[in-house]
Image (cartoon, rainbow, N blue to C red; front, side):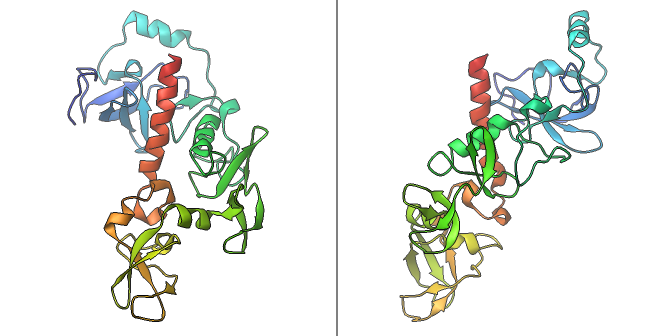
Length: 274
């Protein structure tokens, strides 16, 4: 962990700290270990004892394990309004909220779920999705949108104008489903599993590479390079690098990269508000 110029000087990776003066009593007075300092959020990433859960914590909310709180800090902690067990930490931005900020997802994130999201993070995901109106659930990747302030899934199910199948529409202007939108947006180069020649395919064949970007997918496409048959395909390394992380299969391990981008957007908003 290289300490940046903006990071507090005294806390380093591996140091034991105590959390205090948080809005949620769930984490107050818990012990944790410093993982690193994140410049983008100006916060420490800490790992909680016992559960191993990682949280982003402001510098003013951590103290070294054996450090006594100053009278000023102790007074601040005592002056905080009483929190309730219903407070939660958003799994995207790591901010703490009361239940009235919880995103009520129709697919995931129920009130009893251990993973919760704030409504604004879901809004940002939708705003950065298809046409700025359709995003993905950060848990199950189901398409979702926001209508009259409510989060809904599959806002429009109709026949896709390109593949002619009944699917959730991701592009309402052209009436295209998610796969057809991705196929038009990312026309990528693939390797044939039979002849090992390369072909450009206007369909997101990478979505069927469930065993990783180096594996061949489990759905076939016609090979026009010499096979004359339907074969399986894998995206080239150069093309795979161009795929946004939110559109990659879960097995590719790029989910956190996507959420880190949303987190950066949210922290920039928070910093702007002061």
